[in-house]
Length: 151
Image (cartoon, rainbow, N blue to C red; front, side, top):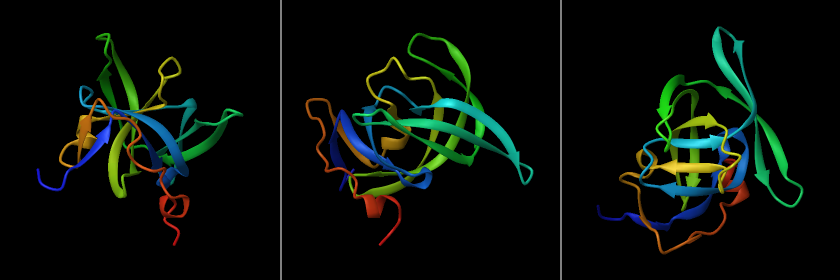
């Protein structure tokens, strides 16, 4: 595992494909999949494909949120830490973290009672990053221009 970047247990990342330039995330090697807290999730058809529209609270003093639309990947059963299985929508979107941009499957769920709106699981981390639980916020905030794919 040469050239693996070591991150803290919590970091800031961007989801540039859906317009999120910075978001706090918990990096969790115990969770297989990645999850994003969303509000007002709805599915709709566009050109014969299933799309999802949802709101993401991006934090800040005024609890700002943005509305996102993206193609649905599929629906899968996910088992939470309490052992409960629920059917969740998944999307595939890019993550920008530690200067790396890569595609991740993320399930959309209600995480309002969690400390972090995003959980980045081991499938997304594997082969890219190591996590040191004694460290936090080891990386600078993602660059806004770079996060949106703008030069």
